[in-house]
Each structure stands twice: as C-alpha cells, then as structure tokens.
Image 1: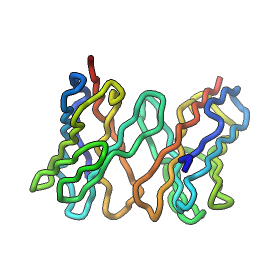
Image 2 (image 1 turned 180 degrees about the horizontal axis):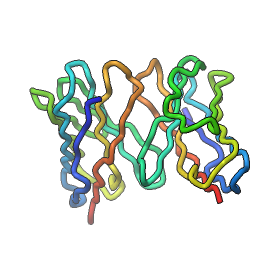
Image 3 (image 1 turned 180 degrees about the vertical axis):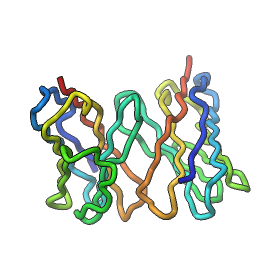
Length: 112
Length: 111
C-alpha cells in the first residue's frame, strides 16, 4: 500500500485566498484525521471522520476552516479566507476501526 | 487526559541502545501507551504500543513498569536514521481518537 497520500506537499498563497488540502487515506481504513503542526502549539487534532462522517470537529480553529469526506478514499481541508497565522504543516492520518493512526507526509502551507 | 513527561533531548552513540523514558503517572487501567516518532520534515511514524505487558516488534521494544506509571522505549541498535523526535502518548480510554502528542524527546544519534 502507498500509505496516506497528501497533496500538495507545499502550498504558498496570499492572505485572503482559498486553500484546499487533499488527502487519500490507506485503502480499507475507515477513520480519517486532520492535524496541524506549528512550532508554538505542536501537533493538534483538528477534526476526525469515522465512516466518512465528521465525529469531532472541536479542534477546528474557526469558521474559516472546513473539512469534507465525500467518500472513503478522499478528504479535503479547506481554509477560506486564509490568513498568515494559518501557516503550518497540515497532516492527514487514517486508521482502521479507530486503531493505530498512520500519517501522511504532510502539506506545508505558507500564507503570505 | 493522562499526560506524559519526557526529557526534551537525549544523545546516543550510533550502534548503541537508545533508551527513551516516559512518565505517565496518571494513566488509567485501560489506557494504552503509544510511541510515535517524527523524522525532520516527515509525518509522525507509528513505532509500538502496549497496555500492561512488554512489547517488541521489528523497530523497538516497549517496557512498561508494573504500576504502569512509566515506560521506556528501547531502540536496540540506534543508527543515524533514528535521529528524530519521539513522542510518548497515552491514549484516553474514553476517546480513542484524542492522541495528545506533547513535546516529545529529540533523540540525537551521533557517529
């Protein structure tokens, strides 16, 4: 298996623009997680899905952030409008039956 | 949530065993201890997990004390590629998805 695949690996955008991050979980996994990592706050869970349904979005910082999982093999994290403080590395992870989480390589987002 | 305490950094000579400690004194009886590592610019990588018994896999060994208040991750023969931040995580029994990563231990493997 190719593991969790995230795209793009790097994203540079200007403040106010919409940003969409993509994730393909490991085939057969039924839980998907979005994390954000910064130097100041470390690795934080933003939201997770179980069987394509959002279960806990308490970590989503504000309404500018939204996440969807239209099917078992694809998820997006959208930021609209983006702000410089959103600059971070965003990780996607997946697991089978809420077991061990396996992470993707991450998307490094820079908002200028 | 049961929090963990780890030293911020450790050094280890290449080829020697690396022993990374973790304190989790408030752990509950059915909460698992997980270890992940993060090599620079990569996503966190699962290493091993356990509940009460010691565990071993191809990457490492996990030693959990009898009272479960602490554990040690052992890399038997550290290589330069093992240089990374190692996270000890207690997985809450009430919410399996709340992985709190903390600050971790930066392991520096030196030639």
